[in-house]
Length: 114
Length: 108
Image (cartoon, rainbow over all chains, first blue to last red; front, top):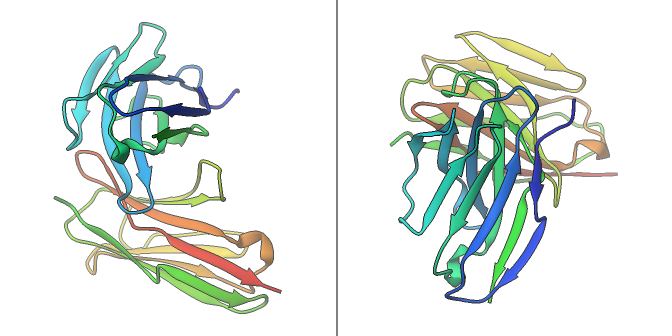
């Protein structure tokens, strides 16, 4: 089975721009979660989607949003980028989510905001 | 909010030695996970521990869980260079809460 894929792998943006990241889960997995990883804050949960619905949300401002499509693929969007948004963004998938299953992580998208 | 702490944050050890990484968490959790992350790579699942006293072993790594003490340990036996990575524990509440990570370097 193919693993979780994320595109693009690297991005450079400037402050004030917006960005969209994409995640394709493992085939058959319906839950997708997004995380931000930075050296200072570690791994922080952004949100989880299941069957096209946001099931849970972390403590991030409204500039961070996401969605999930009927094929379980997910996108996250960050608007009005700030320097502090520079991070590795990881998505993870699991069959049903709800934090009762192992999450399988993609390779991440490394975002640099200048 | 559930807090997860790991120690040490950095660990440099010689090949062939044994060591333990500790993971403490602040409130009751259903389960505990250990993940490994190589530099520039994503997280790889190592173990999931589901109940008090659970022990899982894979190669030179052994993980255990004490839910009463809210403590998990990851024990490394006879370290080899290939084990150099960052190790994260994670517990679940309404989401996954990850520890700070332990950066392990195994020196020949």
